[in-house]
Image (cartoon, rainbow, N blue to C red):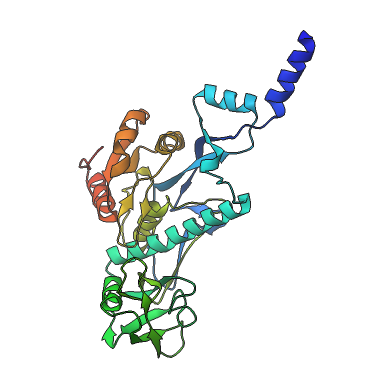
Length: 332
């Protein structure tokens, strides 16, 4: 009976999967370097400048389908943490759907990074259709990416102006939308507004306007097998470094993390302890930390890694300017 019990426990512990995932340090990539033969950040149609040192993005690994013994071993090692699987693979969604969402978030972070970086460098901007809700007045008239030129006869200057003009009308009103799709000639369309589900009595078009660069060159970001939005800050810094003379990091090995929006605001992220660990193992001496993660980062920072506190893209650039000049940047 003892032998049978041992065999049963061994089989259960070795093969039966637990409803948890293991979180640990993931790969770290230099956004100034290459992904295989291609640059991680590439600029076509515009002069670029040499870069040096590192601006590393950091990731968290998520290990799924682990056995009971595997989970216990990872937890006991101290290098991993266990989390309920449903937090990363929600019930009702396939693994392919989750992967697709992560890829979309990663692509969105690239777009936000490009917009924030070029806005920081004072390149011209345009207002476009960011998202479009199916079944709304804009559906079938506008498409994501269309440039908005006028709304109700007024020139479009920023996304907030579009929202304000539409909301000032009543449901049922008709307004003229001027827009341009890719390289096609500009056109106008008459649209009857619906009732705003969030502000009853206000007009509703069904789009989320967004700011995008209005430039004659193209920026592409390539990094295989990476998802999620938290690389946005480091992508934005790499774009700025390539488009400006000198070395933004002063030749230092800088790593960091942070989700960024198109206005350059940097948001807190998850998994900061694992990212700090991997950055230090990769050789980083400075780490850009979103302000919302500072308390957690201070408690988990490895020896030899300086934590630099930032809340915007401008903060990050100014901190690197200070580092390059031999001054002390703001710390956590």
